[in-house]
Structures are given as C-alpha cells and as structure tokens.
Length: 201
View (cartoon, rainbow, N blue to C red):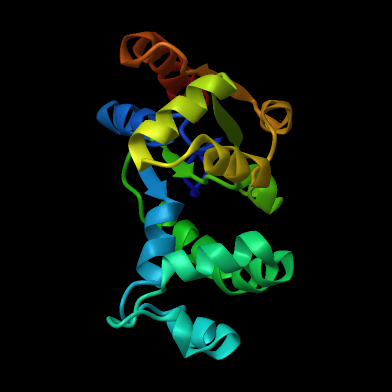
C-alpha cells in the first residue's frame, strides 16, 4: 500500500445526495474530506481567503461579521462569468490545499473527497484514484432542492445549468451510485463499492 491514502473523488449535481452518501461511507470507516466545509471555513469571519476577496471585490462583499456576503457574491457570479473566474482563482487553490492536507492526515480505511465541482474544476481527476458520481434524474434533483432550499424551480434550473451536465459527470465516473429511490436503495450500492475500495486500496 502506498504512503498516500487510497482516495476517491465523490461528486454529483445539486440535490443528488452527496452528503447522505458520504455519511454512509463514513459509517463504514471511510474518512470524508468535504470541500464545501473547507470553502465555508475560508470565507467565515476572519477566514484566510477573506482579505484576498475584499481586495479583489471590495469591502461590500463582507458582511457585518467579516464573513463573505454569500447572497451578494452569488448574485454577482451568476451575472458575471469573469467575476466567477476571479473568485475561483482565490478559492480553488486554497480549497485544494486544505483538502489534500486533511486527506493526508486522515486515519480512515480510505479517503473520500466530496467535491461538488469535481468535473468542472478539471484538476481533481489526477489527484484521486477513482471518481464516484452520485446520479439521479433531473426531476428528482429539482424537487429535492426546491424542498430543501425553498427555491423556485427556475432558480434551481439556473444552478443546474451552471454545473456540469449529467452526461459530463457520468462520462467522468469510474463508479456510479443511483439515488432516485431513497436511503434503502443506497445501502446495497454503498456496501458493494465499500467492499471494492477495501479490496483495491
């Protein structure tokens, strides 16, 4: 076994169930590194990315606590792809470095990096041994996100349009978990993949 822990990149569109699946792998002994949590810590009050964000976008993009004003930034990056690229140039290297450091220190049977934009980022594929895609029908995705985030369908569709397509994610996958039918249908799929990862790590 190599010194670097065996690693899987887990991804899927919004509402596909990435967190649920990651938690089920954690119950089976995997270490989970969630890049969303790392991103939030970078942009929390006093977060290490905040000085660069304020320098790039202006002090109005920090809220009263010193954290990123997410609603204002979301509005900007949806309207301006240049702003999105500038934000990603600040955040993505920091997220990657934080995730790889956490993965190197992990003590689980193997490491799962939960990376919502794994396909879009283009660089994660070379850093993990396998890519695991959580797939579900688009109408299931939309219904879940509308219920969870209280968003109108048009906004959910806009978020989905800004992400990689379902076909692009499936094309990048080594392994696929289908999540159309709830937790009971997930468990056997996760058990099968956990056994595979334990065998090949």
